Length: 152
Image 1: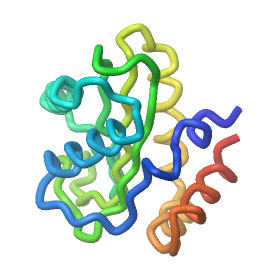
Image 2: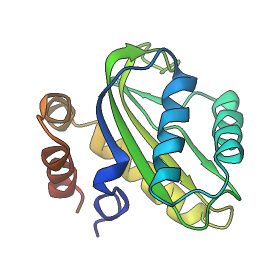
Image 3: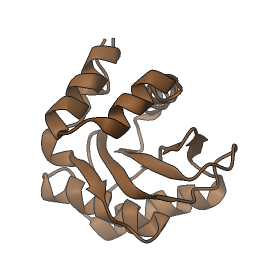
Image 4: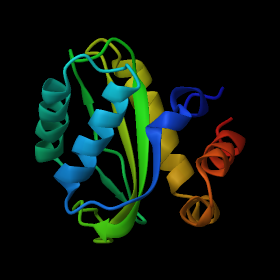
């Protein structure tokens, strides 16, 4: 089942983003989701993601992070992705700075889907080969194709 592949629209993938902080990346990804028509209240979603981030790091390790939240700011679960030019600290358990950020947000009643997506992203991003390909791919189309090929 292609959970991740079907939830990331091309206009919600940013390659080679310049950001100065974890908060900057999250704000940009929230804004991308809003521009794509998925978020009614960007301030609320940003606050909800940052509140969740304050509870425990969403850095997975291996240069990847999945900041996420349940929020009343949207009515379906969505994903946005950024590949960063400069790695940022997300307090990952392995101490590695992050260059791949997958922002996931869903309504408050989507806990089951939320956990499935988190688990699937963690498994996919644990793969050294896939991470390397995502870091090196030349376009959004190739980035999505790589995710879709592995998302089964």
